[in-house]
Structures are given as C-alpha cells and as structure tokens.
Length: 333
Image 1 (cartoon, rainbow, N blue to C red):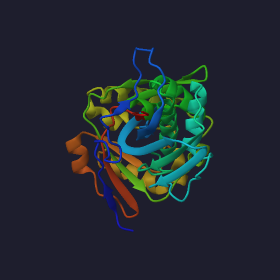
Image 2: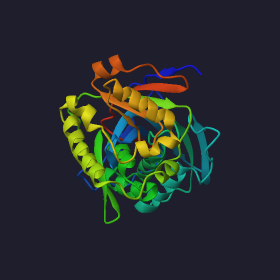
Image 3: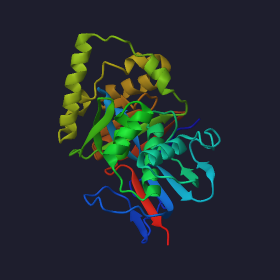
Image 4: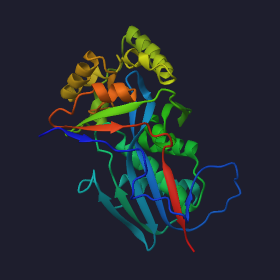
C-alpha cells in the first residue's frame, strides 16, 4: 500500500456552519438562562493525543482533526447514521457510544428527549491512539447540553466523561482544547488547560492496523524502577516548560521510560518509527495507547524535516485546536 498524506485545516468544516440563527452553547456567568427547545444540535469535537511521552495518563493535546455530530429531535427511539471511520463497524442503536453519552448527559441534566436521529460524520481514525472514544463521549455529552438548552459546562463534562471513559487525559483535551493536565480527585476527573506559547504543529503518522487500548495497557508492568519514575516526573515538568515557550527543550522533554517501550510487542512498527524519528532529532512519541506516532515541533522545523508516511501509513499535518468541543443549537420557532 502506498503512503498517503492528509492535511486538515483548523477552520470549521463546511458540514458544520455557524448559522446566523444558531446559538453557540457556552458556559457563562449568567445562570438565569432558561432551557429552550431546539430543532437541531450540531457538535464539533477534536481528536486528541494523550501522554505526549512522559505525561502518562495526565497530559493531553487537542488536534485539528474533527468528528461532527448532528442530532435532530423527533419521534421516539434513536436512529443512527455513521459516515467515515466506524462506518459499517459500530452499532447503529442505543449501544452506540455517542448515544450512550447523550443519554448520560440528559440524565445528569434532568432532561428528557423521547426520540432523535444522530448523524456522525467522523474523521478521527478508530483504535489508533487519537482519542476517538473520547471524542464520542465528549461530543455526546455536549450534544445533551444543546438538546436540553443548557449552557455548556466544560468542567462538568470532563467529570462526566471521566466516569464513562475511566481516565481523564483524552476527554480533558477534547472538552477544553489546547494542552491539558488532568487528574482524578476523590474519583472525579478534573483538568486545567494551558495555552501553549510555543507555536506548534503535530505531524501524526497513522498506520492501517489498530491496537486496542485494553491490550496496550495490559502490557504495562505493575511496578517500575524508581529511577524511571523519577526521570519521567522530571521530563513531564520539562515538557510543560517546553510548551510554555521553550521549544528547544521538546526533544529531551518528550523522553519516556514508563509505557512506550513496554508496549513494543503490540506495535513493533510504531516503536521502530518513533525511534527512527527521534534518532533524526525529531521529538516523536507514541500517541496515547498507539499505534499512531506523533511528532511535535515548530511549523517550519517539523514540516520541513519530517519524512513522508511509510507504506501502509497515513500522514496527517495538524495544528493545535484551541477551543475543544463546540456546540451549535438551532432554536425551535
């Protein structure tokens, strides 16, 4: 199979217009807004990359690659259509992850929508370490806010999405955008968002094969050497500094000793590509649980020095999404 290249742009897709009569649903200080019925809700939610090397289960980065949802209330029951990744593979009923997330969101908001149709226009590859499940969860929860006529509460979405996903790193970046640091406190997922001062691009090398997150996690040891844990703590702190305006530190700051090499048996080609790129001086990491390999860098250096995709891989030239999930509601009446 020949290599491919994909270069999405950070501008909204034509499939998701900001209509003049649409209402962007965002959290604001005014809590007096009343719920308003709507004719349709549209959601755009970004892909994400977790870990970024040393920030295992904590760091996330929102990327300019999007899934889009269109939810139209009416009738009874749920009707699902999927276009793009997942088409012909995922269920088209109440067991669909977006539907489950919409229902969880409506329940949390005390709202009820007897029936609706859901159109998923997907661009995020499934099972490749780019947060497709987190995008589905966050997108579904955000759609519930739109259906309920509620202002979007991103912090609550992080908490609700963590309950569904099990860990907050990807869902935090998907909900908040930018670079996020996530943690669990008393069983509740929380996160802070930082605006990278360094102008970044992210070159993603996505193989045709998938790796299940559960499989990748199963390869991790229960105990790691103290020296490796200490090294990762230092590199994680350094990565925050690198993204805060010190891009020359990215190579050292993306070193990892806790998870990537342990997963080599599940994705040998990914580890080989990552080490090859790093050997060329490029700060490459495994994206999330893999098998995608991500290179971070300044626009000129990263795009100029990164090679084309190997056979059987697709290259995505991406930026950093600064917003996170977005919702548009077309009001009834």
